[in-house]
Amino acid sequence: MNAIERRYDIDWLRVIAIALLLIYHSAIVFQPWGALIGFMQSNESLEWIWIPMSFLNVWRIPLLFFVSGMGVCFAMRKRSWKELLIERSKRILVPLVFGMLAIVPVHVLIWQSYYSQPLSYEWGRGHLWFLANIFIYVLVLLPVFYYLKKSTHKLQDTISKFLSHPLSAILVTVLFVLEVILVKPDSFELYALTTHGFVIGFISFLMGYLFIYSGDRFWDEIKSKRWIYFIIAITLYLIRVFIFDLASPKFIIAVESVSWIYTIFSFGFKYLNRSGKSLSYLSKAAYPVYVLHMIFLYLGATLILPFNINTEMKFAGVTAISLFGSLIVYELLIRRIKWISVLFGVFQTKKYGGAEFITSAEVLSYRA
Image (cartoon, rainbow, N blue to C red):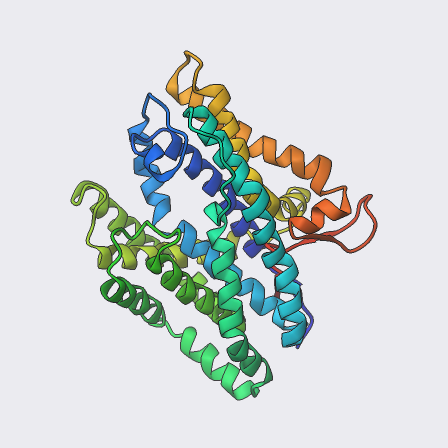
């Protein structure tokens, strides 16, 4: 391997995707069906906001699975399969189990209290279903990743040439389309705890690994076609909004999803591959914030919804409490207390005080 260079664009995309996840979850609070899927629900709806949220919903979760697969590829370069399994167990399995037992039950209790239901301890995957899927993918695909690592440069070159072909995006598109045809999801946007979410996540995770495995040739190719991907994606989105009232046939949504993902990766590769103090902090905070945010989302809803203020202001308030409440806990506790940081998949590489932290969601992002 040649000298390595940090892939800051992947770090930025992960941070942005998690920030959008928080906004998306806040938007659910202001939909007339929020309580049906276990969210707090405002008496006043902001149904208009679902148009931009629907824009996000066809690619935000697949994108995170792609990025997670990329992270495993970067990590695999410097680790044996045993080391990778141990590391991912610490960084994914431990926060998953802790979250199922200590985070999810807390926001369920807040929900029960708000709706005057009997209080009970209920553990489960909740919003952490994403981590469970990733850990399963690592277990299932580890032999494949190990084989690719030990394979000859000829195999890597063959995969790189294939994925760098201008028409290679059709492969990913076909896989997404086949998934919706065979799995027949009720809705493309329903990923959590569904067969559809598991399969689409598996495809995305594997392809994310291969995108990094392919090297610069792939990334240079998609960067050169970024406007083509964007035109396809925005056209399909506008068709979904104005012709199908946000309910395009699922195979068309699958094509739109892939188009947005290629658009985001290609523009990110061109414009976001730069460092900064903000990225350094946020890339480490993103994972703990994701694990924690539902508690503060529900607390924020409990505090803000009773106020007689503009509904848009309520949405902004709930979102702010969800974000900044999670960041404050990260800064004051998770970032500073070792045994707490371990529970959130955060590990110090040296003693705190300008120390570098590593998180399970942090993509060990380097390019050959």
